Amino acid sequence: MATAINVQSSCSEAEWKARQRLAACYRIFAYLGWDEMIFNHITLKVPGEDDAFLINPYGLHFSEVTASTLVKIDIDGNTLDGSTYPVNKAGFTQHSLFHRELPDVHAIIHTHTTATMAVSSVEGGLQPINFYAAAIVPRLAYHKFEGITVHDDEGPRFLASLGKKRMMLLENHGPVVMGRTLEQAFLNHWVLQRACEIQMQTLAMGKPVMIGQEVIDKHMANLSQASIDPVQQGVPEFDAMVRLVDREDTSWRE
Image (cartoon, rainbow, N blue to C red):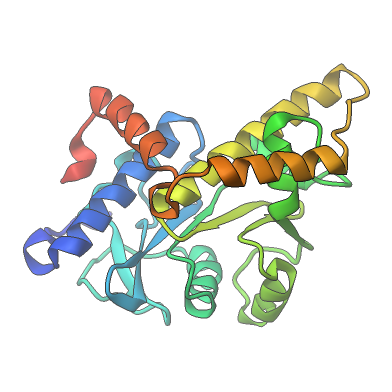
């Protein structure tokens, strides 16, 4: 197993803050049970460096990730911080594509939670049958399953499937959730996860009550009017989860 290096002294204050926020996010996902052994990825662009982003080291569980063990790589996969940890190619291939091609995307989350994978594996995907789904369905894209995401030639098809949306279900696979900030991406993933969990339970009970398009449109308009500064979207929710994580372990800060 590779050993962690102390990068705080060699990186900018902005990068160290980003490292800590991203490490906290990994711990939050572990706390919520959204981890998948040593697999899956949450990436974040390094502030002020458009061609560099942070990713989890391959081999560490989400609950083990710290600010220092995160790996800084460029969009070609080159390690920039001297880390001796490897990076999972399946994570790099997909995340580097979106970081390179979508300048508004600063954070990307890909998970294999049971609920989101289940919904991505049924015909029709996410249905407008609950409060959370009504806010997600109009913003959700879909991409046909082509196997493990390690092939660069799938990139154009990823982008075509995504279009102008910033959330996508990879059919038979799982979600890709993007955001202008890490906190925004976290909140969108949380809402998607809840929508999928509730759909699973609802369909197990019987025929669902569908929400009509007129109500969905009204719901989206109300959410838009009630939304806070986009820069602050997800921040209160994220910070609340950080406080919960800190009660158990603060080592992610190191």
